[in-house]
Length: 245
Image 1: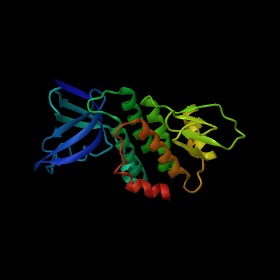
Image 2 (image 1 turned 60 degrees about the vertical axis):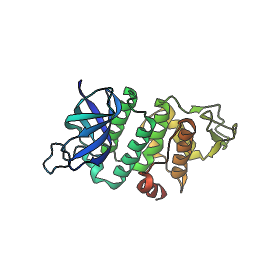
Image 3 (image 1 turned 180 degrees about the horizontal axis):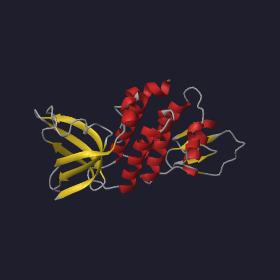
Image 4 (image 1 turned 120 degrees about the horizontal axis):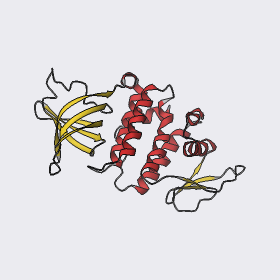
C-alpha cells in the first residue's frame, strides 16, 4: 500500500554504505521505521531532509507485516530554519521529540498528539520566548494528551504549601501520598496557567535559581511514575546546561 502523509522525523541512523533507517512519527500510522535507500549519497534526494525534528510530507510503501517500511519521497511540510540556527531552540526541540517518541508505542496512531507536536515544533521555531521555559508546558500538555492530566484541587491562595502528588496528579494543599513534591509559588502558578489558560502569559513567569530545572524534574518523575519504561532523555545533556543557566 502506498501512503502519502505528514511526518515528524524522530531519529536517523546509518544503514549499510548508502542508506539510512529513519524513525518517523506519521499522521497515518503513528511511529514507524522506514529505510531511505541512497540517503547517504552526496546527491541524494533526501539531502538535509531526514534530520531529527524536521516536518515532512512523505510517501512510503506500507506493509503491516514488515517492521521497516520503504520511503520513496520526502519534501518539507514546513521549514524550521530558526531552530536549526539557534543552539537553545535546537536543544529544546531535541529533548521534546525524544520525550514524545518515548511516549508512543510502535504503530500507535495518535492524531491529536501528532498535531500538537507539529504545532509545537512550528511555534518553537517562530517564538521569541526563552526556549527552556517552554519545556514544562510541553510536559504538562503531553500528560494531558496521554490521559494523565494534572488536576488542581481545592486551593487556599493564602496558604503557601502546595504539593504535586505523583500517584494521583492532584495539586493540593497537602502531601497526600508517599510520592509528593512541594511546589514553589512560581512552579504552582506555571502549572495553573498552563492548565487553565494555555496562552503565552505562562512564559512571563520569572523563575528563581533552580526552580525551572526542579519543575522539569518533578514533571519527568510524574510521567515516569505513570508511563512504564520511560527513561531519562539522552538529548538532555545540552538542555540540562540551559536549565542550570
